[in-house]
Amino acid sequence: MGDRWHVEVDRSVCIGSGLCVGNAPDGFELDSARQSHPRAADADANERILAAAESCPVEAIAITLAESGEPVFPPEE
Image (cartoon, rainbow, N blue to C red; front, top):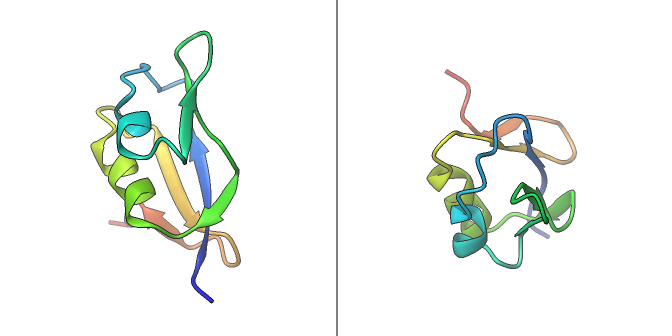
């Protein structure tokens, strides 16, 4: 079985660009205030969710391994 990711959006940083929804419509949605949030807090690791996080212009999306909390994105410096 593959990794599970915990996905969070920092709503104080999110500018509602919608790029995350465009990259991973199954992983993210915009609410009525155009703030992004994950459709589920934990998801199977997949390239679309990673691409969404990487494309966020304000880096509002954080992904960690659900079991350990180890950062997936953004990577630790």
